[in-house]
Length: 138
Image (tube, rainbow, N blue to C red; front, side, top):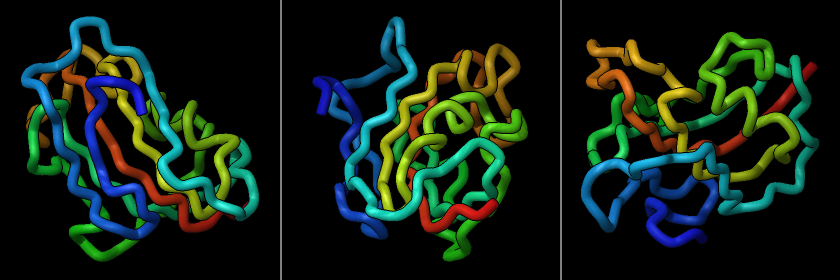
C-alpha cells in the first residue's frame, strides 16, 4: 500500500471503516485504485451492470457520506457509461467480481468544484471509497 493512503480492512465483505493517519487532504491528489482483495470472478466490462457494496468518506473524515454497507443493501448501476463519478467508471472496469477496492478520487474525478453540499461534500474535496464488487452482468 502506498504511504499516506487511508487504511481499511483488506477482507471482502469485512468492515468498511476508513481511517487516516494524517490530517487534511493531499495537496495534489491523484486517482488511485488499490486492489485490496483480488476476486476470482469475471472481469467487469464497460456497459455491465455491477452490483456493489460501498462506503464513501471525504478525505480525513470518519463518518461516511454514503454507505450501502450501513444500509445493508447493495447498489446496482451501469458502469463505464458516464452515469457515475468518473473515478468509478475508470477504476471498476477491468476489475474482477469478488474484488475489494480502495479508491481515492480527487475532485476532478468526483464532484469537482460544485461538490454535493447536502451530502457534506465541498467543492474540491477528495473522496475515498471502499468498494466490494459483488456481481457484473451484461
